[in-house]
Image 1 (cartoon, helix red, strand yellow):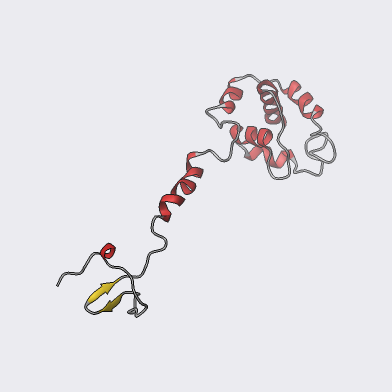
Image 2 (cartoon, one colour):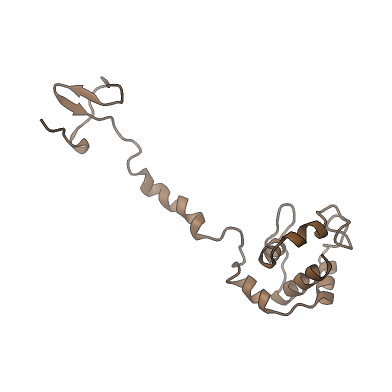
Length: 149
């Protein structure tokens, strides 16, 4: 006697064996599978983070970051941008970048790649809000950060 396919067997009753399979009147009955097809619904949601670069909303190294890195930054202009965006206030990084209530740039910037530094400034990080800078302004700020920290 061959064992019937699972799809041919309706589930009737709860006289389950040790693993949920019912045997009654010589017929094998499998329990219902309420989760059948759920993987078709969940797969797009599980794969979406892999398809997106979730760390950089500005386009990553291949997008806006690449454009910024192609520019030549001016450290003096970058300091001006830093001071004009309230980043130099005591409630932020402070006038020297190290004396405010936010993390000292001396300890943070040296450990960041250029892409990560750009993402942190443009997208924000932790309690730091995103900064609305033009590409040249960001290149200038990056040059200033690399020259000083």
